[in-house]
Image (tube, rainbow, N blue to C red; front, side, top):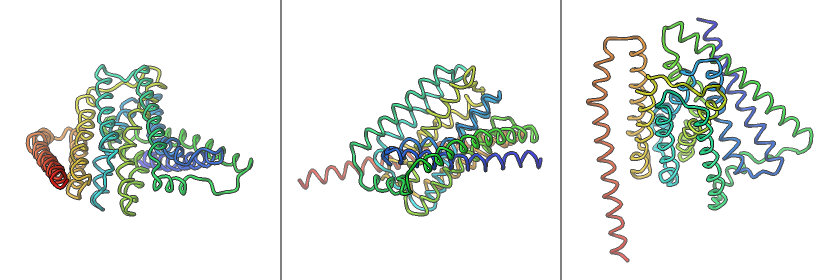
Length: 370
């Protein structure tokens, strides 16, 4: 038990530290080479924050543990919305930018549905992984094109301050940044190996499936950077960053982490019936649930954050009860399906209807005034 937990905790620490070194070295090297800070933030840093998920999923797939790989991606996406947004909204109501409503959230929903459809044959193949990663490159290209087109001075100033290199430049500094990148990558590989070994040992120790471990402990561990970033952004009042971090991370997990894992794995990434019939549909439902909540007033209220958080607790409890073959699990799932889910859908529908009426009234008043 002690060795297993030690492997997981030690591996997680090495993973997070490796990701930090990789992002720091790559962003400073790119700045030294004259790449715009905004481009660095949208590409290198965006990829860097997803490296723990990528390293763990790849290591799991190559080690013949696909359930951990799938559970990591699907569980991280569920956790990002329900736990991270729930906690952040409880701290302070979150502002939702128009671009998220018009582009990024529909893309997250589309990517979630697409991955679920592709996995219906029992695996995400290498060819499908190539297609998914192609969509990721297209999305990155769109972000870069849009950033140059909009010229948002506040965003540019933020990236300039965060990622521009104000340190002395030169060959020695570039070598140091390259060393950061190499050491960061090595730590990611080593940390992911320890973490996966620990997670597999924990599954065997408690008699739980690797899928459940991947959906819960592994997903939480690899998402800790996103948890910290979004919660701190909410505390500091940077409410748009808290939301954008979650949506962007979910898109990267599906179109980058899962895609690259499928490409690298010899036979793609097999998907178990349990993930297909429960966890992936739940991931899609969580993604779809974001749209009406994000649209209503462009604010995620505290009560909506509480609903998200409550669903995450309920979902995790169901996974644990089901893994333990507890007799109450059937009644629990019936209660969720027949009472809680319909009540939530009705609440969302009422909120969306009110928002539509409010916007129509606003348009009618503006036309009358003109």
